[in-house]
Amino acid sequence: MNSKKSISRRAALKNLGTAGIAVAAFAPGGDTAAATGSRRPPSVSRSAEVRKTIFDRVHQTPLIDTHEHLIEEKQRLQGPKPSLVPCDDWALLLSHYLDSDLLTAGMPGASLERFLSPNVDPVSKWDLIAPYWAAVKHTGYGQAVRLSIQELYGIEDLSAGGIEKVQTGYERIRRAGFYRHLLNDIAKIESCQVNCLTGEPFKESEMPELLMQDLSIVGMFAGPNFKQLARPTGIQVRTLEDWHRVIRWWFDRYSKYAVAVKSQHAYSRDIDYARVPAEQADPVFKKVLQKDPITAEERKRLEDHLFWQAVGEATSRNLPVKLHTGYYAGQNSMPLSRLQLNAGSAAELCRLSPETKFVFMHICYPFYEELLAVAKQWTNAHVDMCWSWIINPVAAKDYLKKHIVTAPINKLLPFGGDYIPVEPVIGHAALARRGIALALSELVEEGWLNLEDALNLADPILHDNARRLFQLASKTETLKQAQWVR
Image 1 (cartoon, rainbow, N blue to C red):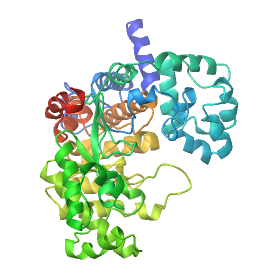
Image 2 (tube, helix red, strand yellow):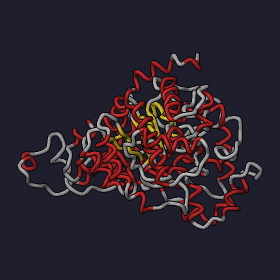
Image 3 (cartoon, one colour):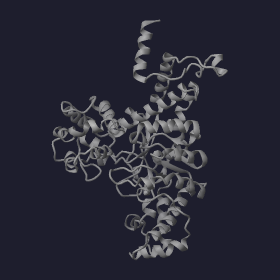
Image 4 (cartoon, one colour):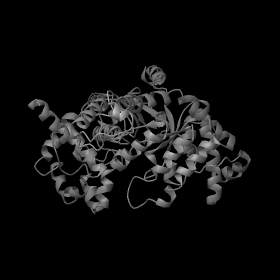
């Protein structure tokens, strides 16, 4: 055997791991014995070659990012802002999601507050998280940050001796144009879909083709949010029908620019929205308008009615409806028993409105087997794996493997970084690509796919499904003509 080839294969094995079942029988050119059902002994070197082929394809394929909370680059460059940009140094990379792991690992809230303060010397901040770093660095949240730091700043892991270099790298990268550089050039992400967290239902982005926007509907039915939504319309809200007009105003103004509508209302209740007619919701709406107290049952009745009012507007305009399911961000606050209901309620939503394209986000973790059953059963159910690769990367890979052999692949959206700061998206995308490549490789090694099938799945999974479902080609052309960027 050629020594260089032998070394190359050993290196590939070291990087990609060993294989289980022989791959050659299932790859193009497999032998007759494999075709008739017999099995050859495992071929480790062949498996390594297959893995390299799949990993190369997945890492070279453009990716659509279907869920972010990224603020505008211009706003980010203005420096610290309460809540969304607490500081403007390397600690910002740990401010979203990983801060929760630090707290559940035992970090005092006061220490975290100092860590994220704009008034603390960046280099000295290491001392605040050092006692807890070893406990969180291997979680999905931790790995996304570590991979981002490795890629962007050339530091393998956070330590006292490397913080100054990390801070220098942070300052070097954070310049005008860095969103496009990080997302397009480094992560090979074609575009992101952003759920704005700065208050307005739709963000008129200065980079609309890169940071495509969802239209947030949660304020249309939860509350509802009279101040935020009614004031821009000029509509005086005195009746339920007036509020219907407010909802239509937002859709008339932004539906042609939005890629989808989004609600994270599952943080407050289950997604069991019943079809409630206007005559049953109207008395409750009058009470809310007059600021009279209402019962929990009355609140649900009004929310349910208005939810379907907003969903009806979305459906008539062919906008998919994105709904949070499963795990909650944060710590010490998640009612797990309620999350168990999400998948069953998702199935009922699909039954109640078969013409609506529902997108159920975050694989309903940890109840992803149940959501997989929904995707297999209901034509209008789609599953978005956004956030899941950093909640539990092993579970996300497991879900993807099972989805491929269980439900139609055109029902799957593989990635959304779900971040406010842009830098950790780099690490999250790397985790997702690794998980996708591993899932495809393992399905070939286990005999569920041949190599050609696995390679042919890369384009649909990484970008084709999202391009089709969200009409990204036509949306891009429309956004080029958006009135606010002319």
